[in-house]
Every structure is written in structure tokens, then in C-alpha cells.
Length: 278
Ligand code: NAP
Image (cartoon, rainbow, N blue to C red; front, side, top):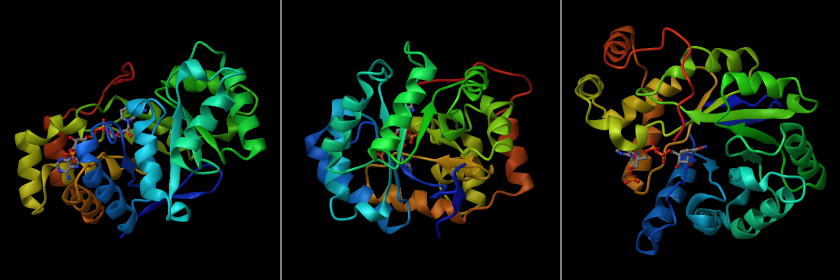
């Protein structure tokens, strides 16, 4: 059963979506990847995260194939490369993404990471895309708390819907400041690489907690991130089996004993840390 959270503008979105970095890169894997994303949609993982960067547009193209007859089911997120976020370039970049995706508009468009273009110009660019109907809303990615505090003071920043950041058990720095900051503002954080790109999954404590739940380490890693209010996790899975396992993680509730074990193995932050970025 899908769980939902709300964006600042009131739009309801699932707390578990689907990432697509490296999806579409290998033509031989395309059928399996499309089947995985489609199965995810069937299971309510209707938020799909992509970016013009991924495979230089190949990820957007593959997502476009998957959603061709299912556009209305999907909350579609893409990202603009920072160098394309200037006054003249953002609309063109967005139009190219729409073309590859085969859609008229994005549900959410994110600045992929901080840009040399000034933030007020970027916000004006996003707002113009909203006015033109190319996107419904916008947000940011990889901005630390200092950058979010600067952003917040710019006209129009009240329309920012999310900050997509690295967050998983092996990288918990956001729990100290950025996550509470976002929670106070009812702005979900979108947790990217929630499985640590797969690197977390052989950890003995994760295996031990998984065994207690008759679950897999990946499911526990996702449940740990999604237990926080206002977090949307976007794991990437390229097989149907992985997507089905990820969807089933929504049913897992970690108890105090589980969290104590995880906290001993993956220390929560006790002071401010630089934002981890991949
Ligand atoms: P991730 O989701 O943490 O991990 C993906 C890895 O986990 C893949 O090797 C995948 O294998 C494996 N996996 C998935 N489900 C599994 C399961 N149930 N059991 C075992 N293994 C499983 O890594 P990610 O792709 O870096 O992050 C997720 C998404 O976040 C990206 O795809 C992208 O959309 C977004 N992202 C954004 C940024 C940014 O700068 N904004 C940066 C990084 C990522 P298979 O592929 O074989 O299924």
C-alpha cells in the first residue's frame, strides 16, 4: 500500500518513488528496465525521478517509453544541469527534456546542483516555465542548509517544493540540520541513493535486522529512511524483483530495538556535517 506525503503546495506524492540514474544506458538491459519501471507504477511507485544528465538524455527517453500510455498516473520529475539553468538556456533545456520524455509538461523540475548562475535568475527561470505551462512546480537538489537559508530569502523561493539530497543509513548528516529544517517548513526532502548505491547491503547489522523482519537488507535500508516524516525515497531498481521488494518495504515498521541496532552500526550525526554529494 502506497504511503503519501504532501509538497508545500499541497500536492500529494508517494513517499517511495523510482530513480533512473544509469537506466537507459545499456540497450541490452532496456526491456528489463522498462518492465521494472512499469511494475513500479502498478505498485504505486508513481513518482519517477530522471534528469537530462542521465545517459545524456537516454534515461529520459526510456522513461518516455514507459509512460507513453500512462502519463496521468505519473508524477514526473526531471532536473536541469546547472550550466543550463541560466536565463537563456533553461527553457531550451526543459523543452529538450519534454521532447525526450514525450510529454507536454513536468510535474517537478529540479536544479541538479548549485549553479554559477545566480539563484534569483534561476528562480525567475523556473517561474517562467511554470507560467508557460512547461512545468507545474520546481525545486532544488544538493543544496546544503546554508544554501537553503540563502534561497529562502529570495523572492519566489516560497514556491520551492523539495530539496533532493543524498540520504541513506551510511550518510545521515542531514538528520542533524537539513531534515529538521525542511520538516519545519513542510518541505519533503527527496532521499537519493537510499540504498547507498547497493554498497550498504552486505552490512552485518542490516542483515541481522532484516532477518528479524523476514526481509532483505535493501528493504530495511529503505524502511529506515522512510520512517522519517517528510522523506521521499527514490531507489533505482532495474529488475521487477527489486522493484517488488522495494514496494514491500512500505509494510515494514522498524521498532526501537531495530533502530538502536542500526544507530550503533550507522551513527546518527551529533554535530553539523558538510552535505554529502555523489
Ligand atoms: P540506490 O537507489 O541507492 O541504489 C541502486 C542500486 O541498488 C542498484 O545497484 C540496484 O540494483 C540496487 N537495488 C535496488 N533495489 C534493490 C533491492 N530491492 N535489493 C537489492 N538491491 C537493490 O542508488 P542511486 O541510483 O544512486 O540513487 C537512486 C536515484 O536517486 C537515482 O537513480 C537518481 O534518480 C537519484 N540520484 C540523484 C542524484 C542527485 O544529484 N540529485 C544523485 C544520485 C542519484 P539493480 O539496478 O540491479 O536493480
